[in-house]
Length: 256
Ligand SMILES: Cc1cc2nc3c(=O)[nH]c(=O)nc-3n(C[C@H](O)[C@H](O)[C@H](O)COP(=O)(O)O)c2cc1C
Image: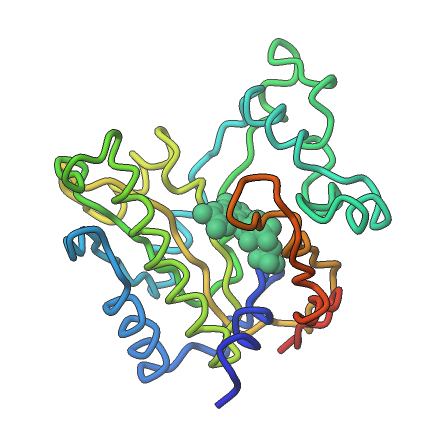
C-alpha cells in the first residue's frame, strides 16, 4: 500500500468524462463509503447521509437541471484565476482559467440583460458521462454545539469528502466534487428528483468513475510550507521547512 502522503499528493480533481461502460464495483463503492463512515465529525454527530445515484435515468434527469450563473460567482471565480501556467506556477494558488468555460473567465463581459440565456449552464456537462454520483446531504435543522452557522458541521462534511476522495484515489478511481448541487435552485430540483425530505440539505455531490481517456497532466500548485507556517509567533519564519520536505512536483500525479 502506498504511503499516505503519496495518496494525499496524488489525489486530484478528475474533470474529464468517465467511462460509463466501466462501473465502479460494489466492493470499491463499499470501501469508499466505509471511508466516509469513519470520517471525524464535531461531537461525533455524523450529520450526513449519502444518496448513491447509479441509475442512468436519475443521472440524466439531474443533467437537465439548469444552473444559473451569477455575477457574484463570476467575480469571485475571476479573482482565483491565472491566465497562463507561468502565472499559476509563480502564484502557487488558484486555478487555470482554461479549466473553465471562456464565458466564466471575464466578469466585465457579464450582461444579464442581453446574455441571460447564455449565462445559463446545465448540470449535463458535469454529469452526463459518469457512472456514479454520491450526493452528500446533512440535516439542516441540526448544528454542531456552539457553532455559529454550523461552521464545525461543514468542516465535518469536508472530512467526509476528503476521506472518500483519498480512498477513491487509492483505488485508482477518478473523483470530481460538484458544489453546484447545493446552490438554492439546483438543490431544490436535485432534492425533488432524489425524493430528499425536509429538513435535509444538499452539501455537495461527487462524480466518480474511471476516466474515459487518460487525463492530460495539468499543473498542480501548492504554496511552500514556509508560506503558511509561523514559528511560535505569527510572522516568525526561522525554520527552513522546505529543505527537509520534498516539494510537490508539478503535474507529477499518476493519471489513471
Ligand atoms: C469543498 C470543495 C469544493 C469544491 N468544489 C468544486 C466544484 O464545484 N467544481 C470543481 O470542478 N471542483 C471543485 N473542487 C475542487 C477544487 O477546485 C480542487 O480541489 C482544487 O482546485 C485543487 O486541485 P486538485 O484537486 O486537482 O488538487 C472543490 C474542492 C473542495 C475541497
